[in-house]
Every structure is written in structure tokens, then in C-alpha cells.
Length: 582
Image (cartoon, rainbow, N blue to C red; front, side, top):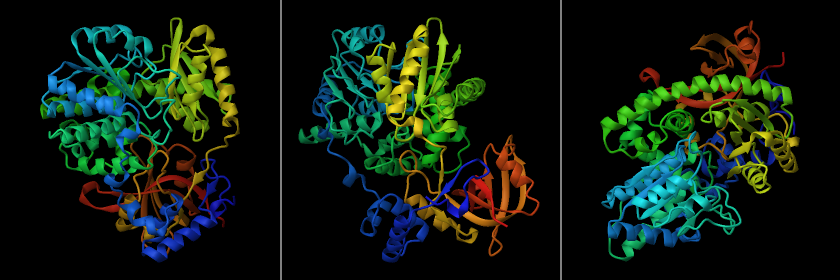
């Protein structure tokens, strides 16, 4: 494909690619039929949305997109057992994973049960002492004092642990890749079970929990009983969907859109406190869920007390919410410092092995298990390859992996575990966790690299910058940005539109904060536009734009509305630039 604006290699080393001719023709046809701005129509065209579907895409309705819960196996049984537990006033425990998806899933159930008159016990395993998923001692302990245990965002591969829950029924509500056999649970609701058709494989665990509660509501209505308002709980589903990097397709789009609307009402004390602590002075967007709120909720499970995130999301007490949010803020700062040290070591190690291998990996003594997943994401971004980072402690290592688009890392890790090269391992296409014996580390990573190469990981090139089209600074109005937001939400599987601004003059450039670059630019025919490039002031982007000496540049990035100081204006989140031909 011909590079966009002729940019074969930008200041950050990327080739720019624009929309293809077919997509451009479709965008023009949508614009003619609907009267929408061409930039918005370009986004619709890139998603394969035709003119007659444009209205439905811009206003996704959950009622139309929500799948029948009973299309998933065991949903009916799971809902029946929950209702029976409520009716009989049973003792219920929720065993949740320590990440955002697990916390949101647990909070969903706690909310629902509380509305039905029951308080549930929350159990979140310690990442370091217990590791991921149900373990036999914890499950046996819960079974001695509870009638029903619901495992959320975990449990599909926990055969031994669930078998240890003698005397209690167990329900698993999960989305991680399943094995050939299921654990001995009363119900296992998981769109990634081997006997499912995969139509709902894009759901996160909180979405699976939501579908079970939809089915429970249906059964309650059939019995002449009222259930809680589920629409008011969609803030949790939206948060989990984005933070767990679930693809924003199908019903996930509606979950996030509706959930953001719920969140804007500031009705959940935990999220209100978290937004206030993070100094978020506007209604959250999908970006904020993934990069502002999500990391703070995760911080408890990474470097602090594992159940803080779930407790924050579930509490109805504003004072308790404020205290937990402050604690998570402090833990997030601690997490950043730990992550920075591990990232530096891991990147040096991975570079020494070569960033062009099918698998980019690093392992280090004492690396904190709570940050290896984040560091794996950084390695993946640097190399555009699947990445695994492992912290070694004693005779074994615990690691986390992140994948590149089109490569199913979870399936490869699952196979590695089945072959006996891992003590434990599983996940989904874009992320995985594993435990490996120290003496098998090298052979396991060699085999994983081989499995990923078979999927084409060794043929991935440097990440191109894909652009939605060309804009003039004068066209970047608040109204256009609002319409672009309506074509979202954006995230995994639905990248935010990026636009190029051609042949622009830099009017000013200055460093702000620790390493951010602020510039003002124009194309000479209209008003100036301001841009900010995060963590770029001392890199090649910042160096070239700061020393522009009157040279002109093509600039590229995402448009946002900046409400700082009560003044509403459009700002470009600058991601790349290239010298314009003289």
C-alpha cells in the first residue's frame, strides 16, 4: 500500500497508511446519503458500516444488541441456583480475580444480592501468596461456612480447587479459555468453553455475569417477582470491558456506551471517589476507563491488598469509598515506581535477545508479580510482538503475557501447559498468565516462541500508523469531535480515529510536566490548533519539533476536547510527525 502523504518513515520510525480507495468511496457514499461529515463517515466505512446502518451504529441500543443469555450453556442453571439461594437466605461467597474484570464482576453480584436482601462474602486471592484463580485451601475454607460459592473471572481450569469445595455448590462465571474437561461445578458459564460456538467469545467476565443476571431477572418476572435494576449496573460492565481489553464489537459497544452514560450520573460512590482522587473533572470516556480508572483499581491486586478494587466498586458508603480510593491512589504511585525499574531491566534483556523474534520475553529475579503484565504490554508495544515477562522466586517463575493483533497467545500458553512445560497457564487471545519451573524456563519460552511463529508472529512488521484521513486545523471543531465520539467507543478491536494535518508550521513548542511536549501549529489558512505529545519531549519527536527552525511538518494524532479551566477547545493528542517535503 502506498504510504499516506508519502511518509515512509516518520520521526518515530513508522510508515503512515491511510484509508484504501474502497473505504474512501464508501465514506463518500455514506456522507452523500446521510449528510454526516466525511471524517465521521470515514470511521463508519472503516468499520464496514453502510449508509442505511449508520443511524443504528451511532446510537447502539442494548435491547437490540443484547444476546439471549440462554445461548450460553449453563446460564439457566446458574440463574436458578442464584434465585434459590436468595429465596432460602443461603450463605453465598464470591471468589473473584484480583484485576478490574474480577472486581467489577464481584461488585455486580454483590450489588444484585444486596438488592435482593442478601450480603455476600467477598474473597479475592493474594497475587503473591495464592496466585491466580481458585485454590484448594481457600475453596475448602469457604465451603465450610457457605452454601454457594460463585467464582467470577476465574475457575474454568480449577478442577482440583473446585473439587475441594465439599459441601457447597460452585458456579463458575468466566471468560478464559476452557480445557477439554470442565471442573466439577454445578454450572460453568463461559463463552470460551470448548463446546461453545465462539459467537460471544469477545465478552469479558463482567459481561458474562450481567447475562446471568439478565436471565435471573427473566426467571423472577416469570415467577411474578421483581428483580433489581440491571441498567444501573452497566457502569461496571463498561469499566470491565474496556479495562480487560475486550474488543469493542457487537454488544460490547452498547455495554460501554450505556455504561458511560450511567457513570456520568455519578451514582456509584466508589467510581465517584476514584474519579475525584484522579482529578478527573469531566464525565469519563472509554480512554479514562482503560488508562485512568482501570490502573488505579488494579493497583490493589498488584502491590497492595487484593480485594480493595472490588470493595471500592461495591461499597454504598461514600466515606469508605473515599478512603479506599485514596489508598489505591497511593498504591498506584508505588506500582509506577516498581514498574519503571522492572521495565528498564526487561527491555534491556529483551533487546539483547532480539525484538524481532516471534516471542519477546524477559525474566528476572524478584520481579514483582504485580507489574509483570504491565511490563509485558510495554515490550509488546515496543516490538509489535507477543511478549512475556516473568518474575523468578525460588524454584519457579510467575509471568504474564500480552499479544499482538492476530496472534492467540492464550491458546499457545494453554497448549504449553498441556505439554507439561508449564506448572500452570491459561488466558485468552490477547493476554495470558503462567507459572513455570525455573529449570524449564528456557525450554518453555523456546517452545512458546515456536508455537507463536506457527501463527505468524515472526512475520509481524513494525507497527504502521494507520490514519483515518486528512483534516485541516480549521475543521477540528468541538462539534466534529463530539460526532466522532458518537461513532465510538474506541478501544481494542476498534481503534480511535487518527487524522493527519499536512504541511503545518510550528508556532511554539515547550516542555510541560516531566517529559511532555506542547505545541501550537497551523496550515497557514485558518486558526491555530494546539497539540500535546505525552512522554515525547526528550525523544525524537520532541527534539525535531522543538528545533524546527521554521521547517514544516505533517502531524498525526487523535482529536480530543479539552475542558481545562472552563474553556472548551479541541486539542490534538500528537502521536507522530514527519518532515513535509520542501
